Length: 213
Image 1 (tube, helix red, strand yellow):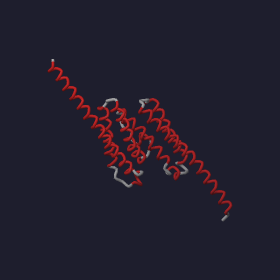
Image 2: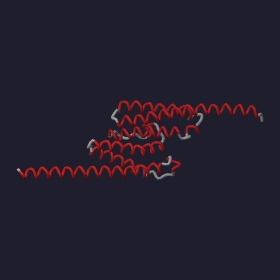
Image 3: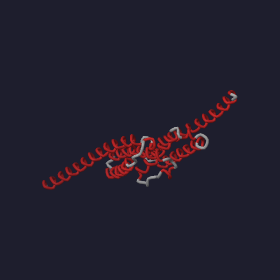
Image 4: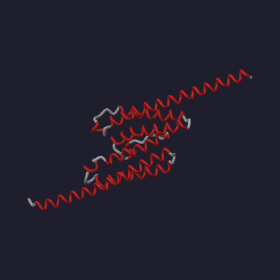
């Protein structure tokens, strides 16, 4: 056994792995940044800009996958590219919530199942943000539509009763989504009750005016 030769060979292999890791990590960071900016654009109603950012995110995920998947699968499954897929899914499903588009499947998005499910869970939080914006504008019916879709997503998530090692700790994400759902349902209910009370008071005031004349 020639230890110097082994040392040189191991060094080259690890240097190659490190170079691939850096490429994939940089791509994952680009993807996450683009997805976060896309979500902000969606909430502002800037959908063309959001689409461009989501396309950028998808391209970065593919670049990271190409950098490591064939020769360094252990790097691919280290987690950071899965985080990028989760954030990308969150952006796409947030758009679906806000705009009433059909939901994309994991195959549509080119992502794996566990990141997809966790991205769906996080999009429920973005749905809450959208509902609060709608309530401030008095658009209660649209808020009810989004809440209904959030509930459908939640029921899908809780049906995924599999070990966390398979689902990427989905149970914890689903618990957070449940708390968000409960708060959002409460906020929406209070707004609806207040609106009905206001309408009833207005009707009564108009009736009294009519009686006075």
